[in-house]
Image 1 (cartoon, rainbow, N blue to C red):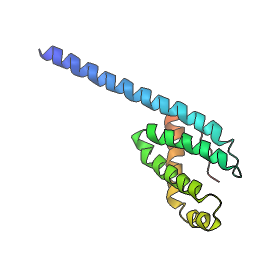
Image 2: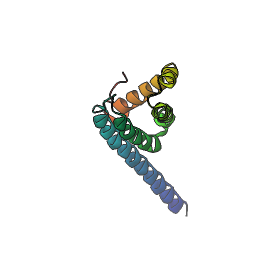
Image 3: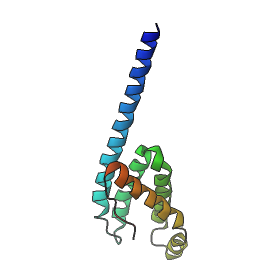
Amino acid sequence: MRTTIATVVTLLAGTTLLTACTEEQAYCVDLAGYAASATQVDPTNAADYVKILDDAKKLRDSAPADVKDDWGVVVTFAEKAQKAGSDRVELARLSQQTGPVITAYKAITTHAKDACKVDVPKLN
């Protein structure tokens, strides 16, 4: 009986580890795609931001715990910027709130390089 329980526990632990690796690998693949498309973003084209925001939302949803909250900060800020559109007053107000976004994005880029071996474009 103890042998059976030990075997079941070992199998469950192994399955959990394989699932975690698979989820992290999927995130890394998606992150590499995001990094490639982010280099093609034209800051004067609002349609580009919509595409990159959709990608960022997907990454936020699939991100490992280490960076999930950081992706949330980035996505929330990008949504506010998208909503502001061309309102210069609102964009100026948002530009004064970039500290937490920069910190979150740095954590994302560090994790991307360390865990996924992906270079994410720097914020300008």
